[in-house]
Length: 233
Image 1 (cartoon, rainbow, N blue to C red):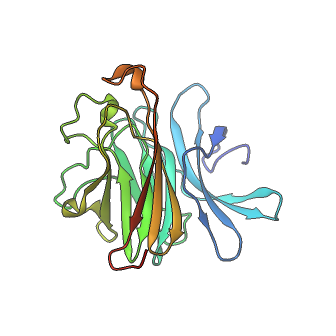
Image 2: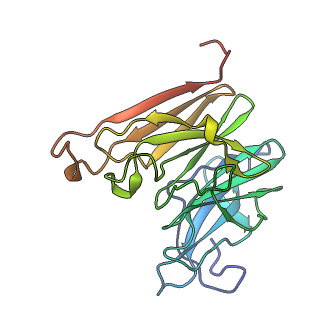
């Protein structure tokens, strides 16, 4: 990363943890990164960095819109996906989850909070969300409030998947399904592996067992296989 961002602020503690990147046809990489623009304030700004890869080394080329909110820890753990002619970015914040989109994967629209199609807040907060493309659909993987889960730390179980309306940037409530149920462990930190155009695998390790009814139990690592309807196994 360069020493300073577009606003002239020092780029501090830059990292790409818990993100999803996009590999472009020309071999370049669009890598979501978070950093602190003020070393004395624990508040993150998120950007997408265009990188080159020569087979051994990833190198910085440029970065795009610097996305931030002043509340809490800012915007962090960004994840990127390309769907059709657009790039979509989801971001974690302490009190909510945010989403935005871009034509080129670098210059983004103003961020907005995740909602259902009726405008009600999605209720995902203080943990990451991830993307998935399955068949022709764009999907979000997330945890949220309002699922009879007030007993769960940060409402991090169950783990949900819901189809996204790309035009309205919202989750369609009728499509929401539980990927992993609440079994006494947090499920907020998941990963997505694209197997084909029609299949993804979601991996998730259980956490914070010391706080729940399964205290002192060993955690499990779950793998969930999701396929588009009507496709061969």
